[in-house]
Length: 107
Image: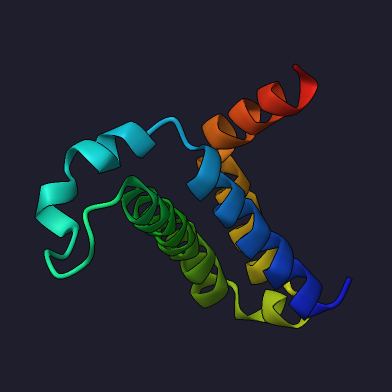
C-alpha cells in the first residue's frame, strides 16, 4: 500500500469518527465556548463544525504516539511504520464512533 493510501484511510477513519462520535452531544453542549458568534446560529452549522472539531482532535491525538514511534525508531521510517501507527491509533480512538456507524449500517 502506498503512503498516500494509508494517509487517506487515516483521514477517512477520523472523518467517520467526527460524524458518528457519541461525544458530539458534549461538543454541542460546550458550543458557546468555541462557536463563533458571527456565524448563523443554525443547527447545521453547529453540527458541521462540531464534527470537524471531533475529526481534527482525533487526528491530532492519534498523531502523538505515531510521532513518538517515528522519533524512537528512525529505521522504521522507510517501512511506513509511522503511518500505520497513526492509522492504528486513529482506529483505536475512533472505536466508539465506528461501532456506532456500524450499528447504523446494520440496522
